[in-house]
Image (cartoon, rainbow, N blue to C red):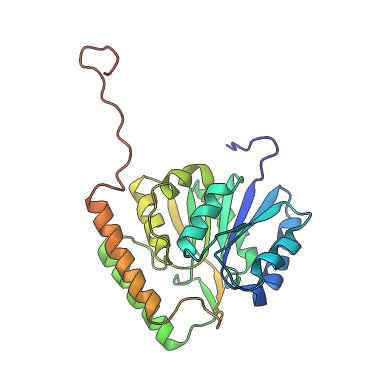
Length: 262
């Protein structure tokens, strides 16, 4: 059952961007062309994470006259912060998060949307690690090994069952995930782990779906610093969980004599 409001977009596409002037033009044009072919309303939100190049200006020019806008962080805050801001300010019934390099082609949205519809899902995550995933351009061996090692650490520390939490292509029911984003604290690349951890904890229906993926050689993940920061953020997630920071809200207890709670 749809809960679309009159005039509300059905889909919001959130694109976090940091110094993406070189490739944002082609990517954003591809996204806009894809959305123009759909039969429902959509919007695009580019969240510029304090870029020092022309990303904001370029995105603004391409979105002029379209349903979309650029949100600019006054300083570099991290991918997690940017996605969180985009989801919170999106108007769509569904939100698709995609990386600016379109390593997963925007057309794979249809595959995620079909899974959400057919299985009544709240959150669908693209995966590069399933038997039917189509990895057409692989990462270099060092990055691939680091990714597998990090995923092992994720599964060990959080119990998440997914083989690939870090693919930057996720479709989510905004109304269902918004309470999660309001609780999230991780600003960096490990925000995906926090989102999935919270989604399962709050009882949302989540499934991973195989997608096409083509590695972009111009990755924004720094080879040493970011994996260390991600491990630190994993520790933060565990610590926050142990302190009760991720606990679902408690329903007020009923008055034992049948009256109003005090």
